[in-house]
Amino acid sequence: GDSKTELKNCKKLINSIVRKYCGRDRFISYRQAYYFVNDMMMVLEKANNTNDVILAIDIALLILDEAMKSFQYADDSDGDIGMLVSETFGTIRSIIENNKDIDIKVQEKIFKKLLKKSEDTIFDGWSDFKTEMLRLCAEFAYIEKFREELIEKIKSQIQDDNDANYSMKYKNEKMLLILYEIIDEYGSEEESEAFARSNIKYSSFREILINKFAYAKNYDKVIELTFEGEKQDKEYPGLIHKWKKIRYDAYKNLLMKKEQMELGKELLIQGDFEYYEDLKGVSDNKKEFYDTLREELKKSKDWRSRDVLIKVIYVENDLNELMEYVRNNKTSIEEHAEKLKDEFYDEVIEIYEDYIKFEAERSSNRSHYKGVCAIIKRYKKIAGKDKAEEIINELKIKYRKKPAFIDELSRIK
Image 1 (cartoon, helix red, strand yellow):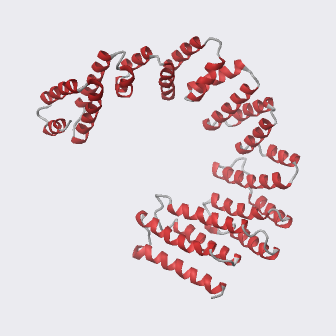
Image 2 (cartoon, helix red, strand yellow):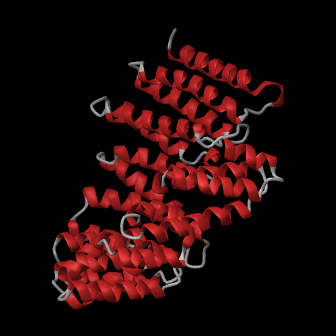
Image 3 (cartoon, helix red, strand yellow):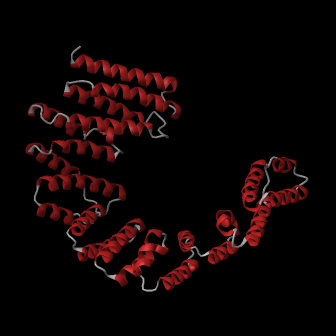
């Protein structure tokens, strides 16, 4: 039939799919969500298989409408519906990209349709999807009058967020990024940089400026911007960490060895092992560097420092230090027994056995007993069959009143 008939049939098909999976409860369980989305994807294929561009867009928007509504009547624990929404946006984008040479009037019709859709209440509470709809509109920014209309629309959506919550600031930042991309593409370099500077309170714009200066090898400016970023974002540890990592690279490029060593060690102790070989390479005394760093890591109470310590010890193959670590952290014996067994066989066996006995002591059900037996199986690969038999027999005697434990021990082969 004609486009109107086809669109009407698609709507009927979508409604039938909804009825099929909702049932009487008007709710789609997470087990059924996958199949619901799969059927909806088949309808979406109609948008890909029609030469009528307007019809293709309209079909995709029908799917988008129902997908957004279905967040309210379906369990999306596995993310299937979110995937459907993303696929629908992707389909619309492909339709636009593949039809940039069509008549300007048709392009205008699509642009107006998408711009109006961005105002739909279905996006209330879903700012990322609303932003994505505006990004689709930005596909038409190469046409000046569409570009100007879109810019005005986006500006009208941005609100004063100086005293706003995180959600409002996040939404504004995403909107401003669309404006930036348009200015960067169609404006001058000066306009692009000025816009980024005017919005530097948002971390993404600070990063844009940093990348511009890094590309120009103006590392002094990079350092300045990262210090400012740390002051501004002191409530956000993740951002502070990002600015420090960027500044480290700037120090490295400027051959500021002292600053690079100080900041790199700070990052290393906080858990970034990636800096170890780098810092070791620029240190004047590699052994002294390792010894000093090792002691600092041992003093730290941060679990990330402990992980770095183990990695550093492994890199340096410092078996004495590794053995010392295991003595103080006996539950780590399984992780390091293979590496230590040749040099410290007797002590490794003793600690391993103590660990098995410790785990057995605190076991109280069959699941726990199976866990102990799994440890014994791994111990057997290190200590051998005879040693394993010895501890199995010892446990059988000690826990003879626990038949489930005896049963699990008897299954060890």
